[in-house]
Length: 339
Image (tube, rainbow, N blue to C red; front, side, top):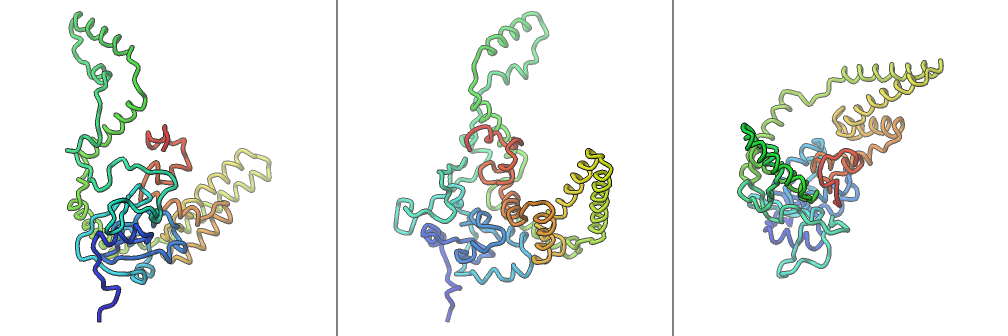
């Protein structure tokens, strides 16, 4: 007799579950329902919200220790029997419908933002170099001026001068300039980076997993603890300099010393937050709490909930909390407007 966990789900059935509030993630063709776990997830809720309706196999393997990976199937409710095509998560503006309904569900799926999120690329569309309507580049009169080479004669010079004078009188919309700038970068990426279609992305995933396996076989993930001993000595030395300079009233050097000490400790807390020191969740969490919470005054739990999202939706102006904490770094022109 087959178990409920052997049920084969179609894409429409999974969409229906998400539309009804289920938190569904695909892991190795297994359909996982995480409603009862999401509030207890050490990495926070938002990181799971960003993978609703998606195949998160590579990410889940990368961000969890073996013990946790072996426990994933506790949340299994069924399987898929086909290559999965990712949905757009509700937190990123994805729209979901129940089976038999033509209109979107009135009940908001898990992770839906309190404000309307309109994705730059329409739901269900894969951006490619041929779809120029998705990244329109409007003619900019200054582009001709900047590339003008024909000033060999006096007449050419006069034409160039008149053209520049006329163009200088044009008032350009800053938003249009920004949009052109972004769309030119998109075009450049589409021309130079691998295609976003699923076949290409699956090949990249296969190569990534082969590399990941090779690193494990060669023990390159094993931590060289002698390096942390050296780091401990550096931090202790800087802390002693801080105390010595403070004692003799050399306050500037004292401040510089404790500043460098905290900076170096931050690197260790970062590694602990990624479970990259002992590869044991409990031990690394204790290290992170001692350094970040006790010495730095910054919750390692709060940091992990933000920083892990940063690695998965890197530098996204709407969804990456890390760049929102430091808005004076304009990593995206979208930070100049309303995001």
